[in-house]
Image 1: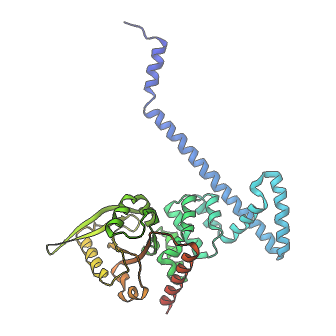
Image 2: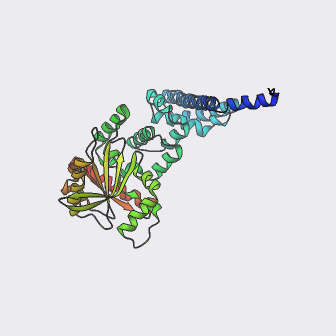
Image 3: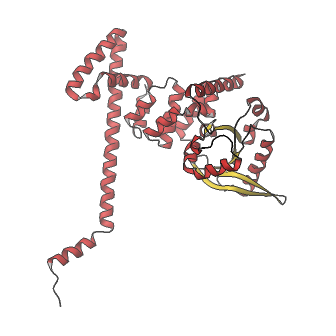
Length: 352
């Protein structure tokens, strides 16, 4: 019998540990690193809140703006010398603002388990409390990165959702439900308008071109729709009384637990589109809805719409949303005016 050499033994031994063992150990190391990073991040975030809160208490006690400026400058010099640039004047002011914007420590503790300090810094400049709460809760539930959060804010996501057009009291109630129960409503999911500039469509194009471009850029389209959408079918055949109809796009939303039918229209919204979508939704409810799912919803994407016509048709009662799409982004100032006007008009109608 041939005797094994030392090299052969080592080679055999190396083979024996190259499977599950090394994989499991690597997984343990990566998990530990991730958990340590989360713990450190949460600790720093809470520390920044505590510093901001402590300075704020001191400034408020004195009730003098001049004193506040002086104390921040003095503190920043001393802390920067001792602990580095993380405690410079600009960052100390951010910490004070942090404690002002998020006065409830328990909310900060909860969010800090998922948010980095950069997440909070992105939200702090927002002026409206409801706007801040919306981005904070959506970021938490959809686990946005800092880059995605900033993109959503720049794209005016809040102003494009139906929830922003409701009276303040209702917005607060829906955000409270999201915070306490992690339950999204359709008004938080659907938006108007949708930005489809990534499709690269210029000048004249057909509905077929629009649909084909969406299929080509499906990942970008789903990102614009929002987290939770899963593609189901294109040109879904629906047969009623031996007559075939074809639904442009069919999705499923995991959080809403329902099918979402999407119809693409080139021109302005027409009243006839309501009957067509209602037919599709009732068919889907009868033939495609699974046990435990909610009633399907419809989204009609048009190049334009008139608010009065949509209001008179009472589309919400049929589970239908109508939204504009933009294949070219307007200037931000123009978009802001358009969205703020839409929010103002919608709130006036609801409060009337």
